[in-house]
Length: 72
Image (tube, rainbow, N blue to C red; front, top):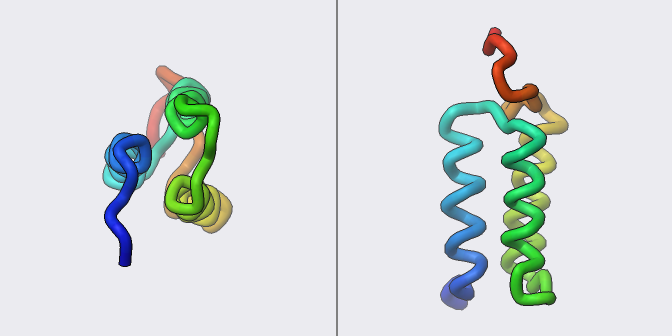
């Protein structure tokens, strides 16, 4: 397996943080998308990371919450 690009490493860190606390805010989603598109190219590694996060949101493993909302 090839090494992650520098932007993919940053993206992975941000996504891992969302996965670890099991919640993601709209602001975090926006920051993730900005980071993914930072170099103008969303490469295959970044696409895979984004797909992983999307799957976890869809399955409920990571919950979308608004900043300041109580976490149930």
